[in-house]
Image (cartoon, rainbow, N blue to C red; front, side):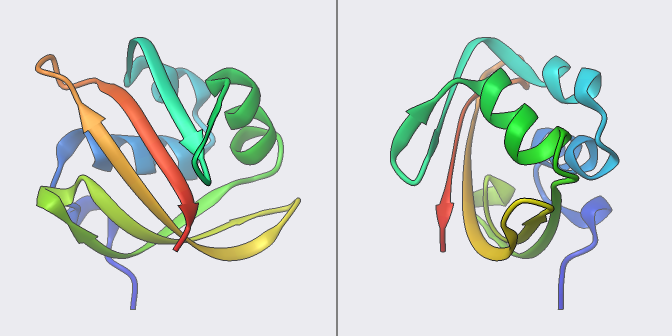
Length: 108
């Protein structure tokens, strides 16, 4: 059973999942620290290109199965119109200002 988004432990990660599921690109971008980075299955990716392809233009959606590390590591059933549904792990680094400086995702 998935965890309700409003019950996620870390407020920045909660806002990230909310923005992804609402397909709210401006809210998503406002959560990223300047110079934020990301990786997918261990390979660094360009955030605007990757998120447009994997989330915003393909109806990406996150159903959180579990969280750890104070809500900064999630196991997610992620689905989009390109790949269907897959079990993924997401790890977030949140800076002192409460913005995401890095996130990593990949198969769980």
